[in-house]
Length: 345
Image 1: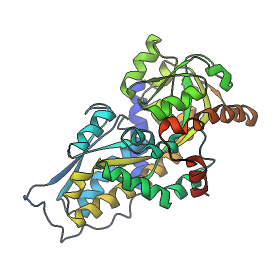
Image 2: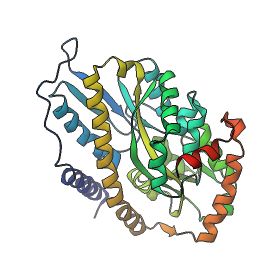
Image 3: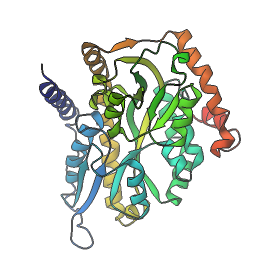
């Protein structure tokens, strides 16, 4: 099968999964009020991922959900593949009150004035997904959301699984020591940079859209992300070694301008929050159903996969302790690691 046909097949499979799992949409509220100026309210949802990845498919479904809830008075327009620029530029535009939404994580919020939020992206923080969801429902998490709103950013949803993040490289990595000095691409924020530096690598911040060429040219020697994203960006074409280290259980959030969100009516706000939450469930269902499929496709395309033993993973976790020892450098509250671990139990 050629690459074009394969891409079409993956997209079709994901769309089918989304449609199959979403037959329970609520009927539109026939009393939906139009925007104050009589114009449709538009939210531009922009992200680095491809439209065929689970997050992309889920947002396509979200368009339908919000249209029904608002009786057509609200609309989502999606911009995949970094069409509106890199994440930091999108967040900066939100701070100016623009109608933009993007995918972001605690590591980015740490760079925008809520330092404690960064810990959720620390390596090997969570033992399982249940701990993630307990933390997002905790008072500690609500407090971080409140601090973020004061900085001008509003979270729409925190229930999206982005995936377990693994490491794809151009030369073999069988244990944590093999990462020493390797240039590994990470998103451009301090938390993820220091997290990978703690493992011995040389973390290199870079927009996701630039990674393929950087691997191909040898500018970097690896990248980390969930399987769906690695495959969606076709990185397996230029990097043939994958270690399933699962260094971060990456739940993600979708964020908008607090100023823009506050300009909506309470009813419109509720529709938008419900839409983001429902789309998150769609995304999670697709993620769970397609992860094995992505792994098998990567193997068939020549990727050598390492499933690390408990002993090897213990080595990774031991190395990661150096990251949490830098709490003061990150501006964290005293005892933050212990506080967060308690909140997720």
